[in-house]
Amino acid sequence: RDATAVASYRMQGLLVLLLGASAAADPFVMLMKSISREQGVYAESIDVQLRVFNKGDSPAYAVSLEDGDWPASHFELVKGPKERVIAELEQNSSFTHTFTVRPTFAGVHTLSAATLTYSATAKGATLSYASNVPPALPIISRAEKYLNVALAIGRVLSLNFVRTLRGWVSVAAFWSSVFGLIALYKLNVKRQDWKYERAVKEMEKMK
Image 1 (cartoon, rainbow, N blue to C red):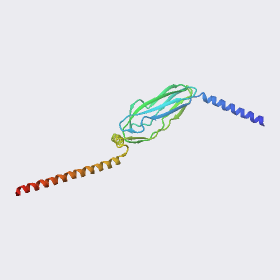
Image 2: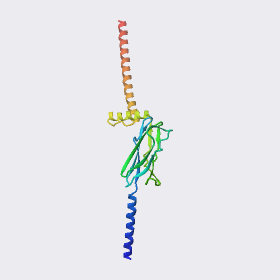
Image 3: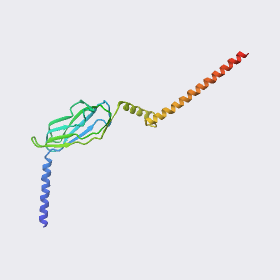
Image 4: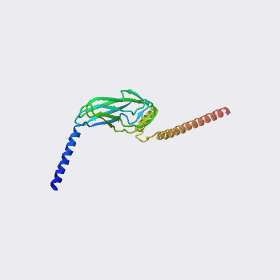
């Protein structure tokens, strides 16, 4: 029984090695999708990068990339197509395709995976693969962008004491009150001076 078990284990090991050698001879293709911004701005360009890797030991054929994540109703295609076809991708190599879009709305755009198809042989069956899914892309208006810049400058000038718009509103209200009190004080001083001058003139008339 022991000899039979040993022979069985050897056969299983040989089968695993053969399957591993067969798999290693195939292309191993992956697709990575990345966005140039963590936050988009209305009417400002965003670069989208699709990078395909062949980590296998043989070429991949008819490699096709496509990203249908940018509808014309919300994005303008500025540069490059959203799809690309590569006749052959050599083993242990990579290829990068980049295109540029411009948002025509403000809001949150939920991203999805880009798609990749390829063949393991020149006339083989088509295989498919999906990329990673980047995080949702918030898109703000230009007014919000300039407000964020102003707040960032304000944080630096205030030594990070005032960080939010509400904080700056409170600061503005405080200084408005201070300047208002100063203005009232100056007005009161002028009134006192005016009364004094009027009293002096009346006394001069009585002489």
